[in-house]
Image (cartoon, rainbow, N blue to C red):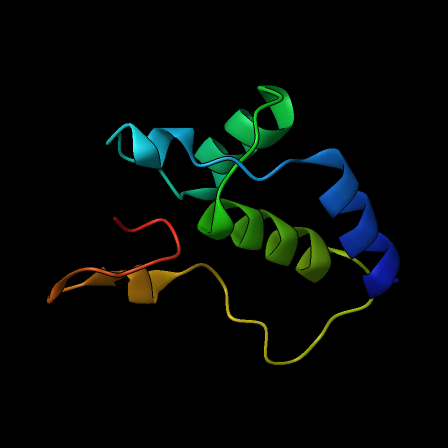
Length: 87
């Protein structure tokens, strides 16, 4: 089930970091991510993909212990987290 879900996700939603590269903020709240990637038909970057995939996986019948919800560590009092999209 996990492999099939992961394959379907990877084949359906592309990686895209246009908002990041253009200096726009990226809203990583679940509703915003769903609106952009699912309803809007756009791609997303790592945090968006991981949040959406984790939500889909946790909502499925097969649950994995140890999945961390969201990416709260990205909101740090020490400033923005460095990511694969950092300049």
